[in-house]
Image (tube, rainbow, N blue to C red; front, side, top):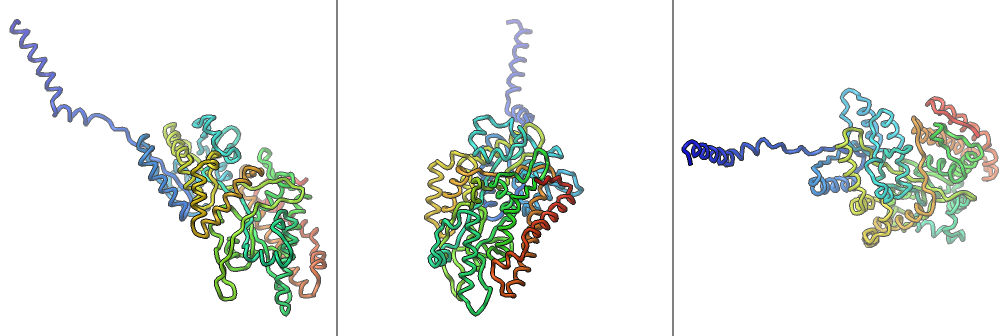
Length: 488
């Protein structure tokens, strides 16, 4: 080999070896870019066990699928539902000193519609296959669709059932020769509540008019909205953005509720009727499946503790009405951002609503899992069995699942479709109907002092005029909120 060629060859080999030396390798590795993880913030309103279950699930996601997909989720509690919604509105509107919008947030349909109006809610439909969507309980998923856009993914749902202090009820039912069928319809409930009031009143003959109320309702609004639907009409026409005031139907609902409230057949005080069961003020109430875990296992009676048995029954139906029950519960929305972030957020939500995670989260407090195949799974049966082997409260929750799932699948699960600003309808129904009930009760109490019979009192209350007054108050409140309404 010629000297010049030999030196050229040696130079090439030297350069090659230098390029492969450890020092050069270290420098090269420093120049390689490591992809930053996609960080997602989730806002929610959960407390207690639900919050713990959510946070545990997020830790598991971050350590498993999140690690594989380079996604990190962080949850932040915003307090109550009202506080969460206020924070969302402030963030979406860019209010000074408000936090940036979260990537994922708990949301009810009316608030989702408001945030969507500001252009801040992502359409999740493109991120789901037809097969994936078919896996959800159809009525649950449908509630999150607005047109062809999926704005809310169901996480856990609830419906309403009728809860009873069976210990107190059985004593009365035996004395009055009644059965559980007395709770089947609203008409039979009113009649049974009247009998219960009279029976408790007769136990203290020296004290007149001290009978006790039998039934309470956690949501008077649901009583009206579901009652309308059972009797063949929607109170809300979301497409026309109008509240429908069906006079004959509303009159029927009004008369029963006001009669029961005025005569103290229905009652309740404070925020939750389960508290009234605890105090002995009531022996039954209509409430969410998620409230079963709060039903007391004992009450104080005659300055002593009395253990009580729990009974759950299906939601009552109006005579001649359709079997309709409420569907409620917040879902999760994703904030509109980049495709990468929206995809990552959707991936987490898909994981969270898979059988294992969703079953643990929902059944920790009486909520309903959102995947249809869960209810036939061995995991669901095992979870129910575990609840049935638990303490008294856990056994109560287990009883609820048997009835709630049958109710959701055999009845029509109804959720009011919102339109802009119609979220104020519920508080307006509550305030105006409560005011009408209080007025009627005061009048009835005054008439009782005149030793009128129940029939005479109800006749003197002039329910027709009171209904007209309620309609005027409700219409005025709707006008003040700028909500269109139609009388039929």
